[in-house]
View 1 (cartoon, rainbow, N blue to C red):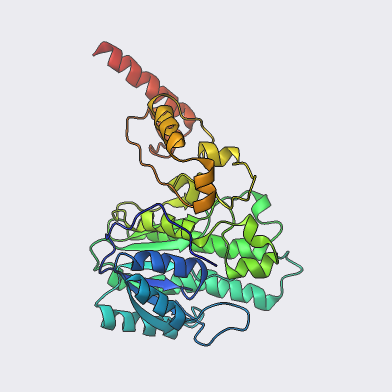
View 2: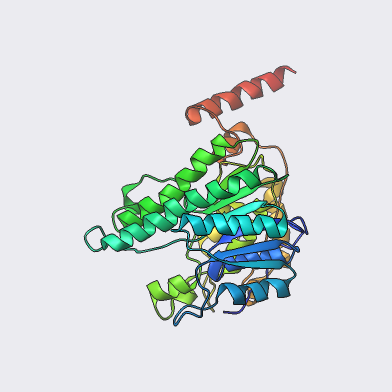
Length: 350
């Protein structure tokens, strides 16, 4: 798969940082590694594949070559996250080689989108061991060194906690295992608040990887977006200060995507055009995007398959701030509305 053009430029903020990335020999993990490598980062490739796989592309050594070519330093380590001693040994080797660990990306994951009766016990064990136990043990091994870093981050590739039964009924075991990763975010973000940022990132729609090829078969690539898109989202998170913690981020909420897996003649969906929350911009924001739309046409978006990031600053009304997640209030929406009314009355008296 050819790399796509990215529209979030490398800032150099990860230069000299050491990233420990599980499952980095291919797919999303490797894409995140290559993005950081462009800054001159040190990458620990913690993955199982040391010898070429008959059906899956890449090994820890071929990934290391790509990382070095991109401008980073690579340390390939054979790591099966089901084996605690392999994790510990790789962490010790990383610290000895690079002097510490600044960022952990828990990307390694096992998947089986099957129902309860169709899921073999060995598959259940695999998903629980890799997704939940592997994430927990890798985080535990890295945390003593992360706490010594100036701006440490843990990023889990896991979904927001949503207890709607629809996310469980068709693949109960898999959902439980991924939510286990998400619960690590909830717990560790609070436990290490002020010391280590702990966040989760999850794609809005499917990302094209070797695993998706196996699950979806021929033609699945046209229905997926590129790994570079999620790598850019991860880069945005990992370059934030450590005070940015405890967040579950859907990539389209972190970055405005003008297009995903665009095909010739395929129109953008409403959510892609308007943003993740579906709210149409108005006022100065609408004018800003009017200018942007004039500069970036549909053909340009199709040809680049790219990601465009825009950061807008300004004052938000309390209600809008609450709905967008910028303002946290204990209680319900009515409190935000009362707060807005109270502030309006206060401003009128000033």
